[in-house]
Length: 602
Image (tube, rainbow, N blue to C red):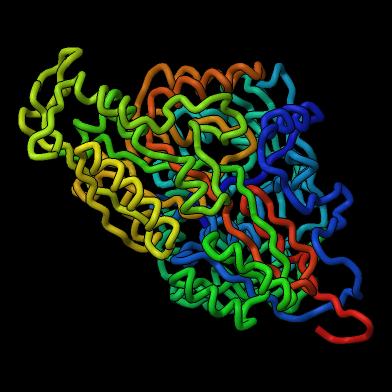
């Protein structure tokens, strides 16, 4: 899965209308979950449900789950980590699909819909009764407060922190009773935004098991981090045996294969039907394809390049179902790199580079129509135009106008300096326009995309060196950094978007992605006007606020937009039902079940 998935939400009736409007233009979604918790089937129907059995789901290349602690830190932000965590430690609010949009009133929610008051400066949350930890202890407000105290006292470690936002924007956390708490906020917020982009993070953690002696939050957090970095002990460490979700860990190997079995103490309405779910990562798409073709997985995927052979899988008893995501995809730019940074900090140069990425051709030829161009910092359906379409002539003109000239076929800075017709600050005369891209390995489509970008830049006189590494290596390397830090010299451009680079929460605003100092602002981009427009999306329910932010930020090109693929082209056994491919990439295998027909077994 691509990095940084998002999940959970939920306030009053106005949320649904706003979210539906936000999702207009998004690709049609499948398998909408009705409000009563029943499953609407896509594909084959009929047959008799059987309880039990093991379902194996293939994870994408290099998608090896390696983080169990449900508080993410830099380098451990991939979506598949969040997906597994949500099955063990579900948040208060889980999004579900409704028509072409999302509903935050899911029957899975651990809490009732939040109640805003005092001019939207307070929010009161009541937990549903009946939820228990796997040791039988009730889930209470104390467990939510435990999570809040950890992120409040260790916000610099938490990848979800953006200065001025959670936990900074909560003045007080008031525990009203065992099942009710109230947040007093530092100002009035848009309820749609606050629930969708702030409350979605609130996750009960087992205070009684993880902090029985009421230690200082920083001390507890440090201890939990130490345990979270012991991948080989995830299945045996007593710490991770206390869970509140529908599943518990049976096995978790260092190669990233995770086996889950039902949590018998689970108090939610969606208790599992299966005996076991196995999440199996593959090192390459080809290896997964071969195992899938041999019937070795029940829920897998095929690369776009073999879509024309999908009929063969249908003959073998599978159905094909593209998994669309609420996402954007991009190449991140390290503006703080010692040598590449001065180049990448030039807006004209970023725009020129964007003009050299033929997104439509890449979508059609490389991705075989299973990707769509990314136009800016929000899903494509929310952008009314592409501000920088493929245009090598415009790219060449921009570079020439700022002092770049070809020497032996390569561009070099011929007019150093900071004037309007100069290369830019800290770019010396004679410097070649040469960049290095650290790209995710394991995908033919990604490799071909990067080669197409490299070819276009080469024709323009720009040298692009490509270095491929496994996804976790790329994620661990492309992190926000100060210019003097050694890690800042380790990468110039980074790509981790084979399944999408960023999956949004309900409101596709930019507070954690493109705001100054934001936790997932990997390239260290900073723009005061963008910061102002991002704040407007947080405070105002005016729909033009998100549009203004999107248009301005797209024009500044803080990253290089690339085609946004479907998360995957799913291939699912016809007798495996109940699968709802949530656009936020959360998983709900507790809904999955096998069927038998005409008295036959699986």
